[in-house]
Structure formats: C-alpha cells, structure tokens
Image 1 (spheres, rainbow, N blue to C red):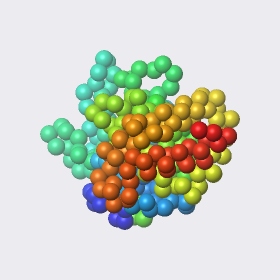
Image 2: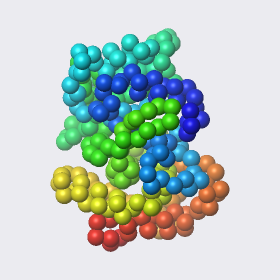
Image 3: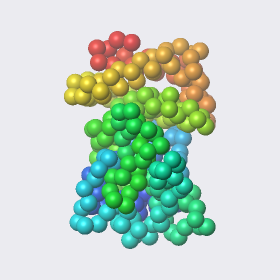
Length: 282
C-alpha cells in the first residue's frame, strides 16, 4: 500500500478501518501513523524526511461511545478476524487491551496491533483505563481532547476514509505531552514527528494560527494547553544548543539527506512559531 513500507501493518489498518465502518466518525487515527497519512492532506509538502514509524494503530475515542446497530467495536473486530488480548492489570484496574489479526500466540499480543486511546482529564490516575463501551478498554492519555477537536477527513490509498487530528493539534499535543514521555526515550521520536509535521505544512501555517486561536477561544483549558505548548517549543528550539534540535536529529535516520542540522531546525522552528502563534510574537 502506498506510503506504508510494512505491508502487515498496512493490512492491519485496512482491515481495522473496514471492520469498524459503523464507527468511522467516532475514531481519530493518532500516534506515530498520523505523519504517514498526512501526506494525503492539502498543504502537505514532502521535505525528504520519513516518519519514525510504529507497530501499533492508535485510535482516539471519547470516554463513552454509543453502541451502534447493537454491535460494539470489539464485536466488529472479532467478527472480522481480530483477536483480543488483555494484559495483566494493575491495582485492581483491568490491563491493556489490544487487537491483532489472527489467533493469539501463547497468550501474547501480536507485534502489530490496534489500541484505543481515551482522554485523561482532571486529576485522574494514569493507571485507570476508560471503558468507552461495555467490553472495550481504552488507555487514558492527556491532551487527547485536542486531537479530537478538529479532525480532518483523509482518503488514504488502500485504506479509505479516515479521520486524522488537525496537524496543528497534533503538533501542540506532541509538545505538551513531552514531560510524560521521558521513559524509554519516547519523547525523542515524538519530537522528530512533531518537527516533520510542522515543516511539511509550512504553506498553511497562517491557517494553523487561526485554528489555534479559535480553539483557545472555544475552550479555556485548550487555550492554556496551546499557550503552554508554544512556550515549551520556544524553550526547546530557539537556540541550537537547546535540547529540541538534538532530539529531532536523534529521532531521524538519514537527516543529512534533508539538509538538516541544529541551526536549520532552529531557523525553521523560529519561522513556524512566528507564523502559528496568535499575535505572531515569539
């Protein structure tokens, strides 16, 4: 399938989206696969970088999703060749639930899998999952609300119509969640994907500014998240000696072919922040 080098992952996406047809408008594809799919949105320009990649398909849902046609999302997946795997729980909470194609192997989840993600709001504990439907468990993650706030329909070749986070919201969420992603160096991959998406949509930065301003006006909490994320990016990227450019260069392989170095990353980030920040000040 065009855009995905891993054909088994491509088949997982295609089969999952097809199986969940009744729920298309409830699901937003987030995480590491979003940068692969953004190339089919208006305004995207290939800058010679490849997304960092992932083995899982993250689908953002609300904390509660109405059952459609009497069949839950889990039932749709299992009726179409998916196997459900539930990992061990923690502190009386159920464990992580994932969906892979084909039979389970010795009780282990598949290497490539679908996982559902719901918003973590307020002072909720990160270990307590959500139950969007009676038989479905979703991991709670902070700032998911923004990824669902302005979803963009996208026709992905070989997959069909899916909803993606607005790219501006994707960048803000990746910036804001950085303090929660230090374990295992996940923040490095996040920063690389953040920079790729930001740079690839440089032709529509002014439109992003309007989107972020509207979101901030619509919801005071979102406005604070956006302001905090932009401030975090300033602290991380406005000097070549800061950690942001280092993270980006570590996150990509073959960055030399795109002509990137720390100074170039700082220059691009300065231009981006000036363009997307409501008021234009950095």
